[in-house]
Length: 360
Ligand SMILES: *Cc1c(COP(=O)(O)O)cnc(C)c1O
Picture 1: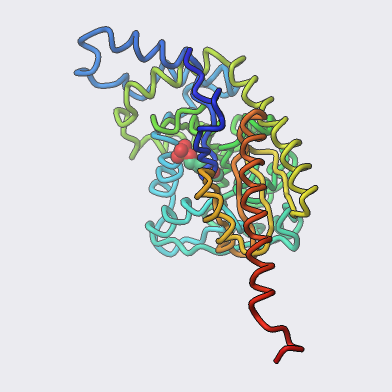
Picture 2: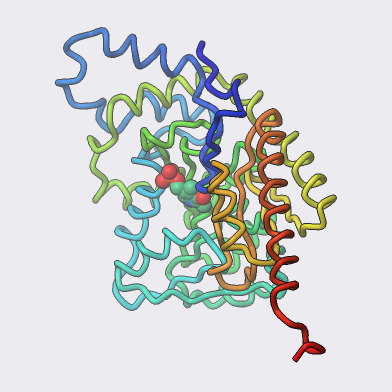
């Protein structure tokens, strides 16, 4: 197969939205091509409710297929939860900083979003969170684990504590980065009524362009969610591709191990250059540095796109970089070095140009 990542020196690196930096498994292309070879396939509606994919996801998650809904990306699952359970004026608790798109769905339902800040934004601060939710004043709590962008995780025990502390509150645990982290709370949906776990094929599985995600939840909640759910909204090529991803888990195991190596390598190298680097269990790292906006702009001129996150609460001067493969990391680092040299030399010339206090 044509491995487009083999000529890294000519490549642009899109490391700003945490998409995979490699193409999906070759099986995905094969499955789509073979699907398209039947001239009747595109004129028919997709399989309703993606039921065969839900059966495969039942094996993958250990949750019964009847408790799984397949959606257009996990964004669509988040929107479905908000649409189903939120009414105007409902309070929604969100540990910040977080994945901001969820806030759009909550607010569009007229809900009141209440921010929660850990004392240290790189830890969950579970006792305070539990105290906050106890009493059940929140209709919904949105947790991301590992969190985008801080990497904070909520363990199974921690999530269970929260579910018990507020049994009438619905908790979303967004596991968009599950495959990189490895741990999950998904099986708790078999025990608790008030949990929805959302997952995606956009990150590790590398098919963000096909918009595939799903949610797993209790028998009770799936019944409510099924009411506004449109069973033909997930497209047929997405269904075919997602199935092919699940049929080639070794390929994704390889990709996750590449991301692991890149995390170790880039964290060490960036720290060696004097930058504060915060690795996460997901496929991105945070870096704190002077002039984050300028750093991102200069890096974009080198064909490396990363995300300025310094506008988010409590993340002063932070940028987020998606981890590429180890091979790609070496080339990315070479370009980072070009930018760091540019920034050093312009701060030197600025120092020369402006008279210091003694020159005034
Ligand atoms: C990227 C991301 C998503 C969106 O995933 P889609 O499945 O592409 O809609 C959802 N949640 C988090 C935390 C993300 O980072």
